[in-house]
Length: 288
Image (cartoon, rainbow, N blue to C red; front, side, top):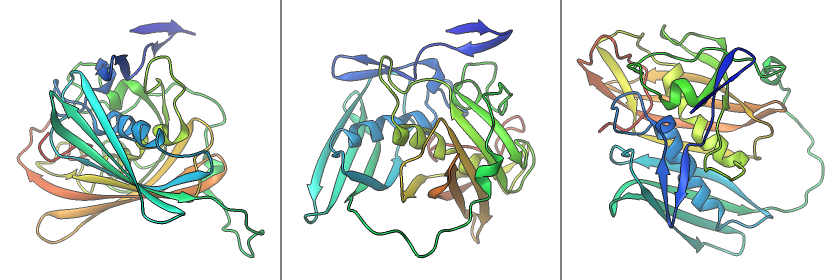
């Protein structure tokens, strides 16, 4: 659903709606490759939501890894999560995403207990935070692979590109904002918002330009942070690297309006022979 606000169409709704013990995805979760499959970001956010339910107020999800083992369908999903305490101050939480009882994605999180420490003797000088958007400005996102349909990467997020291009190859700095709640009727947590957006690192920094017959698809997403993000805007300062044998790596420095908060990595798998109207840039699983 869309609403006209100040002569700009803005999305109305959420990525998911609660349905008993499951979640029904909206069209805003759709990915770039298949009309019946989701983008990796919404699935990551839903998995992190399940992880957070097992995390205490004085704990930090310091790291999480998302694996998209199969295309996540645009149909009702269920989530399961369990916690294993490694020690008194370190725990692991594992979550799985299921469609008709079949596992389609999973997540593993490292949870650390917080403690009080003295002030640091050194603090990194922040530069990216100065480039944060001063206000919410509606601007166009990447149009590739939308095929005229409502998609997550085009319609559910807002991009403010500060460096790079959605069409050309090379590194990019993108300030990005989630325009919809993850679950209808719920407040989206900072970590859910980060999980939904961090997946864009490989998509905005491809080593191949839009229209190239070659490309790289991310097979996972690993995010490590030293604090939770603040505010709606997340900065992704991303660079992708091509290795030997058609594999690669995307490395993304993550920040917010106060400065850097962590880093994301994505292992990339090569593909060849895609249609020229679908870019080398992508976010999703190799089976999508």
